[in-house]
Amino acid sequence: MTDWLGLWLSLVDSSYALLDFMSAGGVVMWALAGLCVVFWTLVFERFWYVRRVFPRWGRERRKAWQLLQDDNGNWQRAVRAAWLAQARQHLLGPLRLSKTLVAMYPLLGLLGTVSGMVAVFDVLAINGTGNPRGMAAGVWQATLPTMAGMVLAITGLFSLARLERDARRALERLADQLRHD
Image: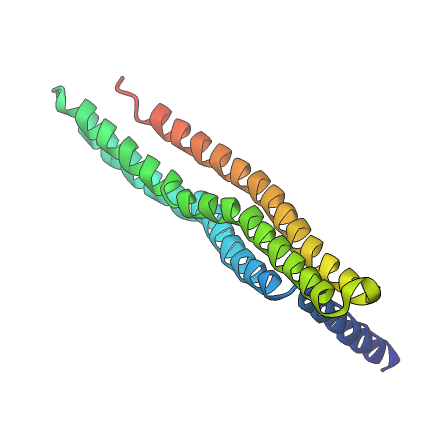
């Protein structure tokens, strides 16, 4: 019983710490968090697609290719090229939105920097240099979103590189399997 209570209390403490961290960065941190959820949803969907859905699609094309190889003619090359173009679009097309989100992370971080510096200048305008706590809060608000934006961009770049590599390998495997003997 006490284990569950301790776990619950540590979860509540962690939640409050996360809320404090997010509110310290201002509104921009919440925008970054929202984009982060959208981005990782898209990334996990792509991993699932490349590993589960696309192999089925490829098997269907390979079965159809076996039937097409029995016929003589040059039109099979056109069918193969069309299928490979379709596969490329299925695998790599949806990554454009994810790349855009990764590019937006540092820009939103810079927006947080600007808004935090505006908060510092507001404190300076109202209190002069006599309120170091107010200035420190503004500097914290300025640096926190920048750091978060850069961390999200770096992790996003790594995951996108992995996704692109997996997608290109799947495309190469399909191209090899659709060779005309």
